[in-house]
Image (cartoon, rainbow, N blue to C red; front, side, top):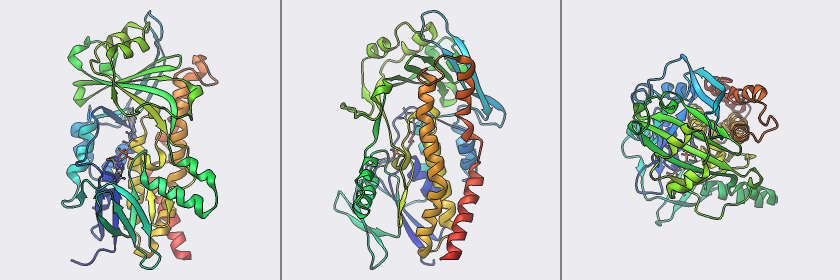
Length: 427
Ligand SMILES: Cc1cc2nc3c(=O)[nH]c(=O)nc-3n(C[C@H](O)[C@H](O)[C@H](O)COP(=O)(O)OP(=O)(O)OC[C@H]3O[C@@H](n4cnc5c(N)ncnc54)[C@H](O)[C@@H]3O)c2cc1C
């Protein structure tokens, strides 16, 4: 076997890291290693939804048939509900104020199953566990990047992919070094995620615990009220209903949240009290969540760059966003799709050019979705300029999903490649 053209180290084995590893494994001339901080690949069990554009990428990666088997319903191109929006923060029955529909609708999975498809598609021997990256350095003399891990292990690579999530160590180092190099302390504000002002509660309900005619079984629902909303949709081939509820203080956006932010167990009563007096359908749903968890929803301020030399950020490491458009994982997959397409065409010397092309295409798009996701939450919770003006609010919400259709990921991929070829021809 000939020597690889270059070595990619992927730090982080979540959706972004594993999708990149799978996409790159299609290119045998690239050596790939995945360094994961924990002792196994894992997702915290709950639902995840994707949209048509992400589905098309998964198909292009050859994973369509496997994902079809674990989707709530095998995806088809027909027009399906995205979300059914209701006004629900009153004791009497609520009402629909918008049904957002689109080709493929909302494609839904149990998170654990979703990640497992990538895990099963990984080539053997590339995953390394218990490897928490603590720092890297780009060596000018050898052109290599050296990596240091908390367990004392050290290694080198030719490209470092920072897939290490919302609290990314790699982002922190990249922005600290840039702030020093450019003598610009304002770059430091991009290191820490900011609280969106929203708390979420999550839970899963076995479908048999709900009345058969409960709307959440048939359709993805968005129950909306002032400064709060409740999302529900069925997963696991319809056997489980996934529920995420949100309660916001918009004035707190950008502040820091003092308590533990990730999946803290909380009493069911706390959840019920938060939505007391909502329509019966919502009460019925929430009363079936025995063990809710509480999350503080954080996002990043839109980053001014995703790459530095031969280091690239992907997924939540560069665009962690509020979950109101169900887009973070899809955007991570899109990062991996575009970056892998570029690297397939790249020599070791051209890596920095490929990363420039990656950033050129992905940064504006992902930041647009990041900002839109936050705005969508404001719209759903009647905190936007449209307030409760349903006639205009409905179309405004629908417009938030424009990015799902245009430009397509295939067009974005071609644009990135064209930009890369142009840069390479001039270098
Ligand atoms: C309530 C909620 C609901 C959501 N719903 C949806 C949805 O329906 N659809 C959707 O598209 N998105 C959704 N998202 C967003 C989505 O979950 C994330 O965008 C996505 O999981 C990010 O994947 P990632 O691989 O970038 O990061 P992560 O999943 O955070 O993975 C990072 C990995 O890196 C590892 N790691 C961390 N530090 C290091 C280190 N120093 N060295 C080595 N490894 C390290 C971690 O252990 C982890 O395995 C939701 C988010 C929330 C909070």
